[in-house]
Length: 460
Ligand SMILES: *Cc1c(COP(=O)(O)O)cnc(C)c1O
Ligand code: SF4
Image (cartoon, rainbow, N blue to C red; front, side, top):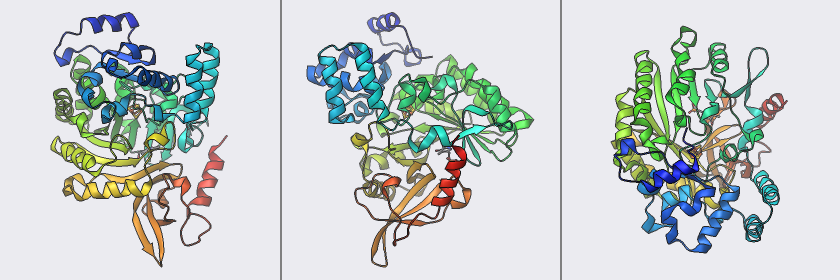
């Protein structure tokens, strides 16, 4: 696990001789350690105070590799990798910012700060798309299976309990509620057995998707407890294992050291048993693909027989530019990675700072796709992971004199909704599905009643 004791952290800071990257120690900083991050000294005191305020509310965690190799400190604060990992003032609404700033300035009691922080977090939609309520799966006896969501027929999503953190945090992360220490907000499980039991009872499931946080923060031996049961005949029907991760960007050493060797052996065993393994790699910018360490990690994963599929959200301040996406997809294809999804930023956390109107997201996607060859056009999107499913913006059109968004489900709570085009009244400011209205004066979406029914049945 990545968490190191402060003393250990300091020690490795002092002795930060240029070790070969394979042996680079994992050194991580959280909100408490902001003052110890050497390159931040070049920012003003006021900027550092802003960071302190924001990191009191939103999760912050960054490791030495990101600081040394990904961030271009000459381009700070605009550098996209700095924006990706470091707190920025605009991430909090002005009133929230001022409230916390006031408390910190006058050294208020910790309990007062904690109370204000809890209230502000509660106002930031910690569980978008009803993640907690709607998707909780139940075993055959009707018991809730912790950490397991079965939202789409063929795919089970599982959150291993030890995988609920990341090597660094993305400042926009919609999973932020899992990182801020409020147990009641977490979705997690330590029950590998429960998972295997559930899968065995569900022959319709072809895909297991391990996610987090980042399951790659786990030791390989722990990960194997969830994965090895897939090799048993009872789980023959589970053909594809996907692992959602940003470790190829934030800590590629994970795939290089001894633990990495063990992981790749595990992938090889799965490949030999004709199980497909896919790392669902989270990328936001082509710069994450540039380091030697990242490239070696990608090569090694591919050599194990696993494939890498890439996905990530489109965000203001980081990648709201067709040139960035075109270059990202081209680089991915060059390295043998398959572009998979471009997401619209979810309606949670620091969304106001990062959100981009859907119309512009679609235009950026389109202009980027136009610049790349067919093999890079496997990136679907822009896609909103909303309550009823993954909704893709196919475009803006005019039908009978009305300007509309053309939409379709890529994934739906009901599989029958998938691939049916539907229409929303054009709205240049809308940033999410819940801000759209059915076009042509229709009173509701074609899926609306059914979805409400599904929600009623799921809430307990
Ligand atoms: C995206 C997603 C999946 C995986 O969907 P695929 O279309 O199979 O990639 C599974 N569960 C949830 C909740 C998701 O958002
Ligand atoms: S790596 Fe994924 S889960 Fe972790 S902080 Fe970034 S977006 Fe969130």
